[in-house]
Structures are given as C-alpha cells and as structure tokens.
View (cartoon, helix red, strand yellow):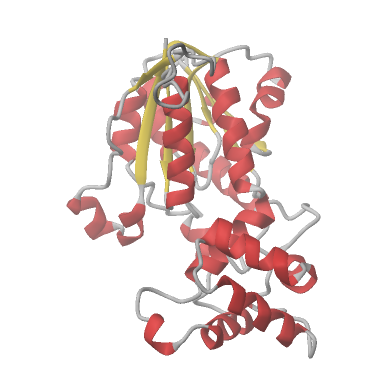
Length: 312
C-alpha cells in the first residue's frame, strides 16, 4: 500500500534547491518520501538521493513509495539521525553533496498512526521517540525529571508561561501514580492553566512540543546538521530548511546569518574580533510560507517556514 502524505512547500523546495540531472542530495527527514520523490524527478536519471529518518516505520514506508514511483535505483534509504550526516555519507563514500533538505515537521503518520504519543488529541502511551531504540522516552521525562528540570524544559523548549504550575502539578500527580498516557498529561496541563488563558489554541501544545524536543535532542541535532551540512555542500549548492515553530526558525535564521558572515561584535567595536567569515548567501531574505491554495489542501502547513542558503 502506498502511504499518502502531503509534503509541505513541495514545489518551493525543488525550485529553491535549484537541482539538475546527476546531483547528489541529502534528505535528512525522509518521512513518507513526499519531498524525496519530487527531488529525484529533478536529479534523474543519473542523480542520487540519500534519504535518512530515525523512524523505522518511515524508512520502510518511504522505500515502498519510492519504489512505487519507479525511482528505487536512485535512492539510498537509511535509518539514522541527520545530525550524523558526515558518518552516513562517509559510509557511502560520498564526499560532497549538491543539495541538503530538512523538513522539521511531524508527518501525518507520526501524529495519527504511530502510537507514540506525539498528538495531544488522542489517547496513546507517552513515548515520543522518533527512534524506538533510544534510551529516554517522554514517559521517563515526565515521571523521572525533577520539578526544576521540567519547569526549565517547558519554558525553554515550549515557551510555556505556565511552566512552573504545570511542573508542580505533574510532581503532585505522579506521587499518586505514574503518568502513562497522553490524555492524563493533557488533563494535568489543563488543570494547571486558568480557564481564561486556555482560549488560544490547545493548552497542551507547548508542553508536548517541549517534551518531544527534549526526548529527541532536536535543537542540538539541528545545530550540528546545519554546520556539517554546509561543510559538505559543493560551492553553489543550497540547503533548504522547513521549520514549524519559533525555536527552530530562530536557530536556522541565526545560523544562516552567521554563515553569511554577519559580525557578532558589540556595536562600536573598531575592529571585528568575532571571527565572522562569509561562507555563502541567504537566498530567502524572508521565509517562504505556504500559499493560500496549499493551506486549503493542507491546513497543517500553516506554520511552515522555508529558509534557503547557498554556499560560495
């Protein structure tokens, strides 16, 4: 069976990567291969794509979808972390790439069918691991982290204004019994936030985001991948990053500005001492967002932002 998933900003990604026949592309967030297949069309018949995902269900699904599309011979499908791009490409004896893509959003299958507790809209066990072999799960974080640590990650990774109250309520609840399921955590969060402040979106959204980021070391992996990915690009090649929340987008924006040689010295310094070095140019001066037509087909794309950088 072919898995149907709507890739966000599909046409824009292919356009901005500016690919040609024979190119080698690294897709670090393979998912259902929606972007991957479109990229293969641009680099066929002699190009290669390296598709990476931590989720074994995703890699299996992607392999079937790529084969179904008739491009099986042009893809290397690998279960792994995109932050390990250097090791992955070294194992394939690939020294440089012509394109780099990360789509940092959760796929429909992760939200709706994985059973890992990514969604606050359904009852599932607290897990949230992209890689089922990873040591730490959302259950471990919620039930074992100290109150101060929970408060820190809710505020740092979720920008949750009620972080302290939610952390305290979790500690109180888990003294009675472990918090095992998503609906239990949602109830705790709702009880921690005054009713009049629950009206802007789902009250559990920020906490679930924070726990998922902590579970999978998402922001540190992103930082590593941006630096190593740029290093592996050939001159003139581009990296395209799709983010879905402000923390990710802020990191991508700041790293791209650093790569573009932005000086970080305090204002008034007579000479630059921060070591800023221009390594390329920001292609998208403002992030590219989905069109109204795309949002009608895929409302989940609303928060997506695409930023693109070209190496010199």
